Amino acid sequence: MSGHSKWATIHRQKEVKDAKRGALFSKLARAITIAVKTGGGDDPDSNFKLRIAVDKAKDVNMPKTNIERAIASGVGGEQMEEVLYEGFGPGGIAVMLEVATDNRNRTGQEIKNIFERSGGTLGGPG
Image 1 (cartoon, rainbow, N blue to C red):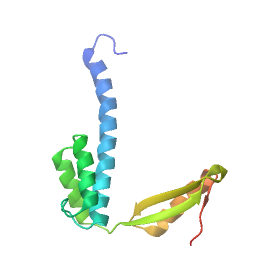
Image 2: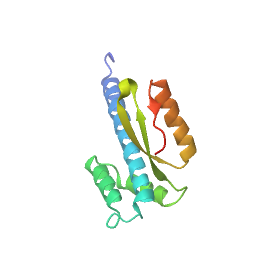
Image 3: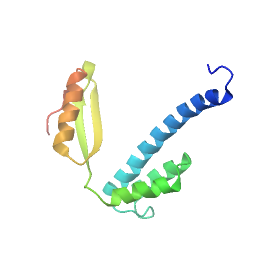
Image 4: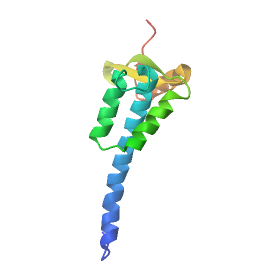
């Protein structure tokens, strides 16, 4: 409770909403960057993955400058690749992970550690 200050109440509510919105924008910006790197270019008309990612960003009112910045960061920088991992979770439940990474070895070790901590196993090659 904020006592008699109306702004303190508004501030707390706004803070929660802004945190959720910021997290969503970060997730969408990452999706746009990955779509540019893996989908084949920075033109939404020729890159289907990018068009879908930009449409999702526009649906949640992501600012145009943020979208353009995410596209620009996807054009330059290190090359990302998509890797598919298979494993078994607790109770023998099969899990498939599609991951975008710039370092396949590091990501593989991180995924293996996550599986082992949660009581699962990473599937073998082949």
